[in-house]
Length: 476
Ligand SMILES: [Zn+2]
Image (cartoon, rainbow, N blue to C red):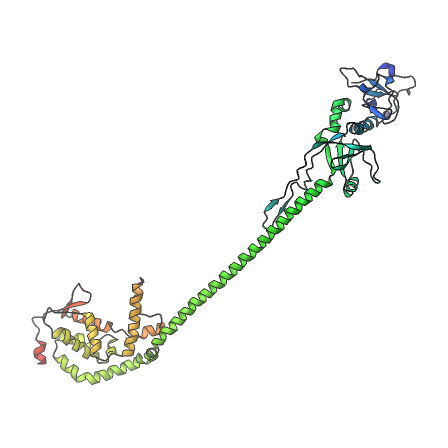
């Protein structure tokens, strides 16, 4: 607790007034147009200072005290509220003018309007960073100093010039620089620094070195109200960045366009390919069908059930006599095998009974027992010896060749069909091997021949059963 000592209790003080109020303490006294610290003037009333706020006389106190900071007190209570703040404000201006130097703050943009470094997003959402503006805090020498020079609508506390030009300095003790003033200064393109002394520690104004540091050298209490060079630098950086982002966006757009075009071209190519492929298949089919055009044209008529029934009747009638003779000459087992026939047996152009009887004669009856033949040879002999329907035979060969080719290509194919023909055509074409193989199977069932394991289709003529009789003898 700090008290005003007895000697300063003057008789003319208002009765009951409290001259011990803490508000009377002021850190600086005014004399000869300057403000002074207590240590810079004479002791007590001899200091000759008045209050910078109310201009009432002051006394300098505790200049040599170890417990208390030196200070001034009002000689008489004036109810002064502004002595401390006015003194701080005046002393700060005076320090700057006399020392002719100042720490100017770092410029670091503005989180919202001017982030440093500037950044921007491209059309793919990628964040791009611009060149950071690097303006650290630094101590500058000042010249052409002037206190409260008027610029019309505003009047900075201190006007000065440094190596970059004009520098306006505001000391904030009770009033900060307002937005409107800041805008005017910015609009005029002038630099302005504000030093905030409003939150000084209570004792700092009473500490000469501490106060000087707070005014001239403390980086934390000062900001740029206006710094056109930094803003221009930032804007240039932002412009460079925006240019880069525009270029990047152009690339992105081109890339997207290229991708879209490539996708479109691929789609068209694929469509064309499948059209070509389909077209080639249709073309090949037409080409290959042309080879069989005449035969295919006859196929429905040649294979109609009516026709088949009719020609079988005709074949039978014309072969009746010969078949009768041959049947008489063979054993009953052979007769039975020759009188049955496969449904396609008509394809050889004669009565099935006749070609079967003659085949038996040629390959079995006329051969000694133990002799061999192959079923392939039988098919060839039958086809050559009689009158096969050549149109049907050519179609059958086409089917057969195609199946063989397919099997060579590694695909299993059982059905005899040719992709060039329609399903109906494939079904109508009669087989030229099955009637022969079917007949050989019947001879085998009657024990007239037997199958050998190899080669495929090989048969051997068996001896006649002991109860049998010689067909040759009968024929003869
Ligand atoms: Zn005062």
